[in-house]
Length: 561
Image 1 (cartoon, one colour):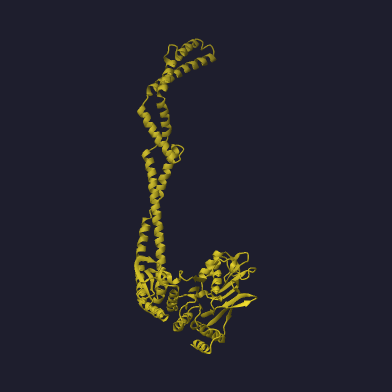
Image 2 (image 1 turned 45 degrees about the vertical axis):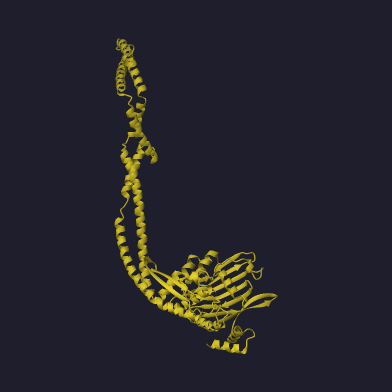
């Protein structure tokens, strides 16, 4: 079994196929209720589904071309008046119409093109739209009945939880907004704390060092002096001796010269000025000698002080390198900036506490609504299980049972606190397990039909196209399956590809797919059947071709029902 789902509001109205597989050209108009497609095995019924797969963005190659020299074109028309797709069309610069046409083309060269309302689009965009319009599933694949969110939707529909869910969702959205804001504040707080810790560590280093302006220059000079103390002391003493203390010291020589020149200082003004300058130079050198002697006495080679100054400078250089500061002045500026940044961090603890209080109240209210939802869900489960079991028994699955688990938890989700699982047992005595683990393709088909027929009036189900859902059943079981399909089509668009005359008799619109020879080639064609043609087709399905008179009578009876 294979089935394709179309959103009810996106009802498919027409499918046109040209030059695909053994289809030269055909067109099918779908009714809004039950469309039946019949035909012999291999006539091309399932090829229609393959062509429809191109509309969904499936890849194809030139092997699907009926005529290798012409392009393949597949077009599907959808009525989307009730579906909220205007924003999609606007966001993607597409013209919005009540009827949307999706077209795929495949050229003989292998080039594939996609169009939405005649506008060329990329395959990714086509898939995005078609995923909203078409829900294609394969046998043994993830049918929506496997999907736990869809299972929950069915239970909620039966429980009449729409109003309660809307109230819950509205409050849950506000709750999630607040929790996201709280998470953001906590993250900011955590980041700020980490950053403050790091800044404080850096400041502690600088505060501990306790540098003062000008200290670097002073220490570097002192280090130079201490490192060269002996040499400096020696040259200072030598300078002092030469200037002042030697027998022929500079000062004594200047003194003798001054005395001799003093004899003539009054002879003229220039000699007087020279004398004054000579005396002044002598006095300046005497002062200098005194200073040099004092410096020489002050300088001592202090190894302990050398180590102390070196360690202090090492700390200074290390921190300058760490903070990329050129000198102590720049490093002190870094310290000032760090202190200012520490002061700039705000305290959002009050905002966090207030938000936590709001969230706690929201959680309490959500849990109250979630309990009501859970109670309503659990209340409808037994009756739903019984009805599904009854329908399965009608479809020749007497021992098959569906078990629905509704497990409440403390975790709030967008649908409450329940975890819903559909468990299935196909045979008597079999253990219940997830549907996907135990149900065969045929069992899945019938289970899907039964569950969806029960919720058809309560939930906006996808429109269904069933591919040989009646495989392996006949007679009264097939008749009952046809009735279920017919009832389902009262609420939704249903298309069924079938080999069962009982199912075919329930059609509102009946198509016959057949093969014929045209120009020495086999082609698939489709005819929409009149009532008389339907009688002939159903009779043929009952007894073979040509049908017997009794088969015709039976066909008329089936149609009359």
